[in-house]
Image (cartoon, rainbow, N blue to C red; front, side):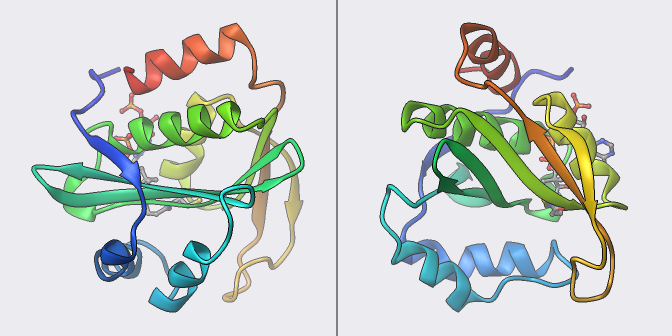
Length: 167
Ligand SMILES: CC(C)(COP(=O)(O)OP(=O)(O)OC[C@H]1O[C@@H](n2cnc3c(N)ncnc32)[C@H](O)[C@@H]1OP(=O)(O)O)[C@@H](O)C(=O)NCCC(=O)NCCS
């Protein structure tokens, strides 16, 4: 495992929306629109958590989650295509989960395209493993894998986040 990259992390702000939508458009076959991200900022901190990562003062990635009771539902994660394989997603997801756990999150879940090997490999590092399939979940008909990690509010999981995210 390469050393986690240096990334400044902070909450998503309105001024990030253009850049985040740009990264999203370059990252996903069915990208979220800018207005969808803007709507996320209208939600309360009890409902949503969105962070961005900056390298040299430029936003290079983002990650967001929704709270459903004690479940942290990871909604979207992307890194600028030219900045991948430097550990940025690892740092982003580690920080997202760390903040979510601090807000009461106990389990993590998400859907991922079944053919998205990079994302599945990323999430496996966070012990998010497959528990089922949602057939035809995506607009183009691709199935989603449902991933879960249970009991993330433990000392052991905090150590894993530290290893993966380096903070
Ligand atoms: C998935 C994604 C966020 C990974 O971002 P990244 O910054 O390149 O990932 P990292 O460098 O932090 O890699 C972390 C781990 O993920 C896995 N991984 C990332 N990219 C991979 C690839 N192309 N092939 C295989 N494994 C990969 C590896 O396990 C890696 O750990 P390692 O570097 O120790 O081997 C990025 O590829 C992306 O934005 N993809 C498009 C959007 C997307 O699919 N988002 C997920 C939707 S749920």
